[in-house]
Length: 307
Image (cartoon, rainbow, N blue to C red; front, side, top):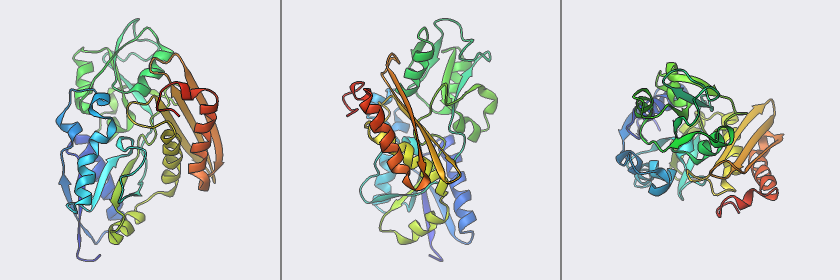
């Protein structure tokens, strides 16, 4: 490993580069004497900022080019926002490290500081997420939801320019960009359950690259790994992706793990919630068990993929 320069692949957005800085901080803390080079790769999701994600093919559009570069050996480690990754890793690749997780909650950005309760009737709220849309409409069926795409700066600007009255974004993204002042309201999980893996970044490597895997392991946070493993196991039972109105959040409490999960119809008319607890070492089983509980209660009828 000594003398090797590890090539770290990332998307080129301001948020992706901020997340790569966090990944590099974790890697350098684990192995300060190694060399690192950042390689920026444009993905299909970066090139097309207008087409709705569901029509582009879901969240894999943000990772495919990075994974292809990994498999070709052009980079050694890819940095992703975990919620951009499909529920199952690509063949030949390993989710090698989950560094420290930032705030997993969603937040409301509004021009005048309005909260979800104080937004005017029929207010236009921007979101491209079926998960957020379902939960918003369950709480405020009067809202007019508007599909918005673009990076964090673009979506905040659309609110401030008056194209929409408000937008729902991941709190972690705003915090990483130093834009906490844009948050009018942090939405607690009881109000808006976040996406599986939200607030977490993941380092992906080739399963045959022993050195890269060893480096990543040193930067791994076992409690973050357990939490997101439970969340993604829950999501996977519903065919997880950007098109699914599915949410999950796990919290590690001592040696135990507490998982909350949700599956909803796109308009929020039908909404199934549940929770499960168990030992941290059984994270995947906890996620699958909670999903099966919701499916038994009827969540399987919400979507043809929820079977």
